[in-house]
Image (cartoon, rainbow, N blue to C red; front, side):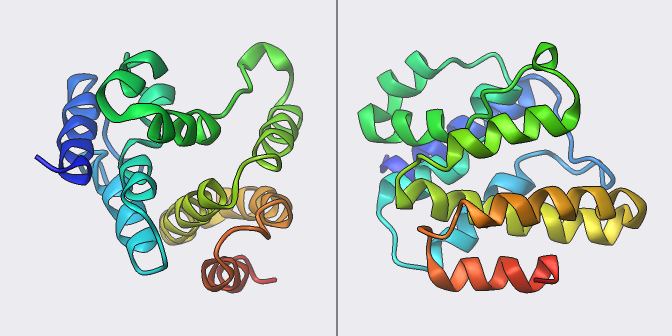
Length: 167
């Protein structure tokens, strides 16, 4: 089985194992990674970027650790997933402080990771604007700040994200 298909199957199983559902729609969570992978696939990419798109929330949201990602998918995918996993923790402070920590971290990521992050931002922003306009005001402001550190990602996705965010 090729890497991308293995990543799809792995991510689907990992999110299902913890019963994770999409906020607002209560669809299986894998709908979101599928959207992110589809968005990344519309731009210049390599298989590792698509695999990372499928796996980008696995470490953060399930019982899977980075070592398992490394064993299953190799160094590059594990590195990308590591960059895509928010480093902030509840004990780091309020939401604004945690988002600042996450922005500073992703600002140092390679362009491939920033491209996947842009796809993630696009997918989440569309969903939140549609389903929670009140929270969207806070969320979109956080993502406008995030967008500034993602300029080395794919320029077409960056521009798409900027339009969604109202920049």
